Every structure is written in structure tokens, then in C-alpha cells.
Length: 202
Image 1 (cartoon, helix red, strand yellow):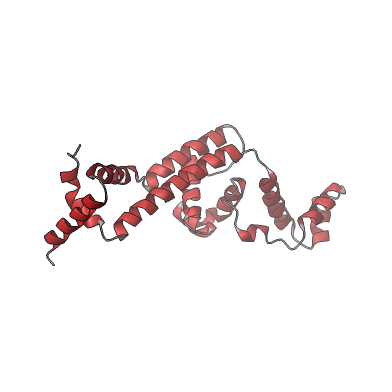
Image 2 (cartoon, rainbow, N blue to C red):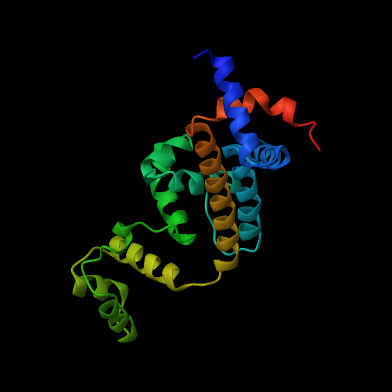
């Protein structure tokens, strides 16, 4: 079947199902609302700048680098891959610490060789960090990392900012899903081909 004939058939089907205006408006919205990675990064970077300006935590990473961290984490990249994306694989530990501070936890962050209550009891007992690390059978550096994870998990200071970041990410994910759906349903070619004609319909 010729492509032009197929497109005409699809357009006729659309017109039978709904009005032309109802087709055009969602398509215009989908084509115009997809925000690319850079645009989302800029929005997140602005929120990160607010967080840093408030002095909630210190890091060697800039607001834009923190935004890249958030996006890359959301895409499933590990700390080393994120550091590599930032241009320096040696930043992996810096990435991990900043990631935990903004509550982007991995399951491995909570894979501790002791119960959280055990650590709390030892801290409350007045023991020094060296004594606690010896009691738990871990190094002082590991103890610091575990304490950092627990403290950040329980700290709600950044929650309002992190909710805003979550909204930005979810909005991006939603628009991408919508666009993928339109692209993959086999009808997008016909829609694109006829969209110009349909814009004039009132």
C-alpha cells in the first residue's frame, strides 16, 4: 500500500475517532513540552545553587555538576560513571558523598555489617569513634561513611528542595514517555505528515 494512501487512511481514522482540534492540541503540547537533558539540568542546578547558598552542605562540585549527578543517577549510572561524566574519575568519592547528602541512596549504602540501633547505642554510650569502630570491627573511615548515610537518611532539612528536584525529574520522565509512546505507536509518521494541515482547523 502506498505511503500517501496509508497516511490518508490514518487521518480519516483520526477524524472519525475525535475532532481535529482534539488531535492537534495534544500533539502540539507533546512536541513543544519535551525538555531535553540540558534544560532539566539548568532547572536542577538553580535548586542546587539555593541549597549551597543556604550553606546546608559543602562540596567541591558546582551546582551544575550536582545537577549532572542527579540526572546521571536517575539514568542508572554508578558513582564512577558519574565522576567520569563530570570529567574526572577521581571524583567518585566526592560524588558518593554529595549523592548521599541529597538522599540519592543506593541499596549498598545501607549494607552495613551491624544494626543501626547497635551504632546508636555505642554513640550514646559515650565511646570515642575509634572505640566504636573497634567494637564494630570496621575501619574508622567506614564508620564515618556509615554514620554519614544514617545521618542524611534521618535529616529532613533538604526535603523541600529535593521534592522540587523530584518534580523536575518526574516531569522530564513523563514527557519522554509520552513522546516515546507517540513515536512507537506507528501513527506518528501520519500525524507529522498531516499536522500542518490540521493546525488551521477551528
